[in-house]
Length: 502
Image (cartoon, rainbow, N blue to C red; front, top):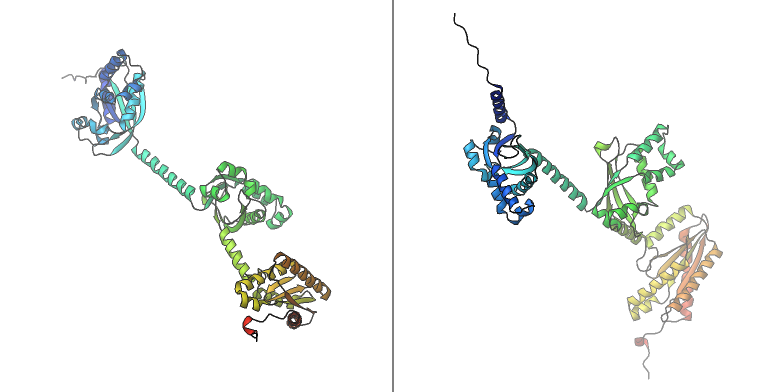
């Protein structure tokens, strides 16, 4: 019977070497076994020459960095290294190290060398390498002098962890954030990022207390609106906001918000709270704020609680578009629709509307003063329409100062004016007529030269009577006054009308 011989068992140290070989080859990161002994020898020579600051020594001559890199000897690499750097085999990789370690890497190499110079046995560093196909690789380098080789540096394990995907993702994220920030900062409209979380808490507390009619609650507790305004936290504003409100910087703006949001803003914010109470998280309205100089700003506001923050209201975006110029234009167009541009009194369109309103509602009696400028045609003929317009403007000044609300003075024709006096009897209307004459006399003192003269006629309309008839009666009385004026002041004959001397 043949005796079977047992399989030989390798000594422990051989088994350890085999395990190391397997781990080295199969490691999921790039591993390099290198010999740094020549680098150590180079460092010792420099120390002997009196070098104490390696960073300064390398900076003085970039060729010394190359000298350090050439002193490193690669003993072997693992399979992950070949795959990572797109090398078909060890020989190809080692013959192309100059293509792998280049450009961006040099500054990082200096940091590694300085750490080793200063006695570190483990060095970590973020650096850049390149695959043989030219692909940039962002890697985390760990350099470890293996135990037992600290005096010679002849066995150094270098691991490279490929962080390219993560670095690219972070770079893309940073670029996206920069893009978003640039859009925010350079927006042509005022943008505010605000935190309304405390406002939400206050509204929730009111709702929890059993309040159903929030509008009534705000009428009873107007101080609640003020408190909510005070609880808004401004997180950020953009450049256009500073320009719009005349603030030199964000700190100044945020410290003076009470000067910006005041007066009319209280009621506007109350309406905003009512809409939030009813679940309207996107809103827009016209509001009035104030610049830090105190100038009113008419703004179109758009407000939105971001969708992913509806549970907390801790991120709200507010945009403000300056419509002050538009509001001024609208006000001017409205003014033109109801005023005479030359005299700045009400125009005929407004006069007709007011006449119709008074005919329907009163109050009674209504006094009517018909007024006409004396001698305007002669001035236009002799001095031109510019002089005539100047006289009409003076008539507007007189009536504008002499007639106070509820009285209304209007220019209804070329040199024809009417004053409506609702609720005035004849005695009160005569007082207004006397006031017009007093202001007219002062006006003539202020404008020496051409005298302004007005013919006036008065009529009073009682309840149930025709305002149109009263207007006609005032007109007739005015023409009677004008006739008396021309009898006392006959117009001068033109030179062409004079009889030539005999």
